[in-house]
Image (cartoon, rainbow, N blue to C red; front, side, top):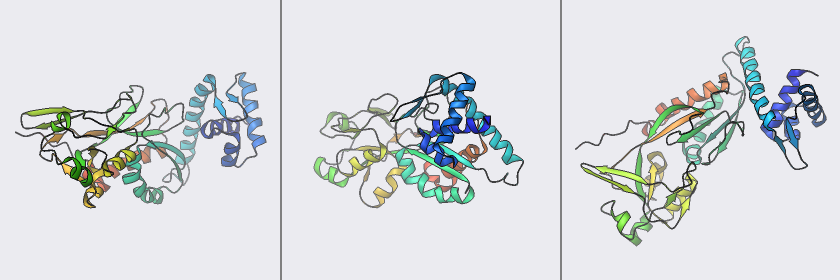
Length: 312
């Protein structure tokens, strides 16, 4: 048994969740991949994978071993890259998870630039607003809005997203234009609720103007857990929205949303890129992180502006 091939086969089965898909990506037969994993288990005298007719799931021992194997393979890949003519061209598969609006409005439109710079990096992009387990799901890094409360992660602050309050013309025609944020607490107005993945609860927002400060939760008849769905609900006139400015730029320009309370200040939402501290920061992950920071500050400067002070 070639230990490197066996470890690579095992790691790919964990990452793809399938012997068939692992074999395809490794350009091996399914039989060969299966035999390599079986030989590895026999050598270690540990069951690494639970196999059923429908799925393959890593065991607790397998998850621990995978982390060691993944770090080793990444280090070997870096060593090969550093000593070859491809030192300036990182390569390999990179798994990243990002919020759906960030992917839709910023990241995916800019990806041709990333692919032109790093054509040998295969980017596996997970797009969702759910809480992702980097270890269990073999994700290299995540980009998330809001404070990172998981102290087991290494978090890199990459931007501050200015927020605003918006509503669709159809909504304002039905309910009127609120003159003060307290009307969202006391009147007939409604907001679209956004359920935060970490807590499962709808968000509330603090607004400040001169000496006034008000926290608004609002009355809502619809709550969603996805940013794109949240925006679509607001555009459909289902309630008032709190949005990062980058999400509202085009809808406002198209007349689909109207800004509200523009003389009030809302604290910006921090944006972080996070990864597991025991995950080897490979060259391909490093160049992706640096590219994202560049994207936030250069390609889309309007979302990386410092928070405006609340001046009297």
